[in-house]
Image (tube, rainbow, N blue to C red; front, side, top):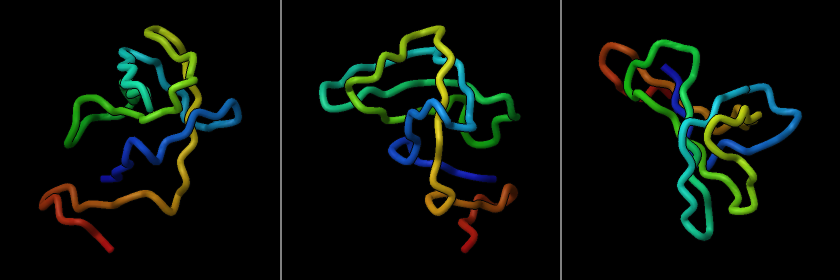
Length: 84
């Protein structure tokens, strides 16, 4: 199982992760964007990205995201123990 923190996702037109925006939460200094992935959920039903407050993302939009591979976390699917 792979984990990605919301702050480690970045909006980028050259990104490789295409997601459909289901909800946006403008919080002043950031916008939390909710989306679903086309993958079976194991530990979470919905995913979030913490984006710049200048994002134009809104519900129904297709958003391209990028993640730095060094910020990925890996877990054992049976025990949910972090793998190093």
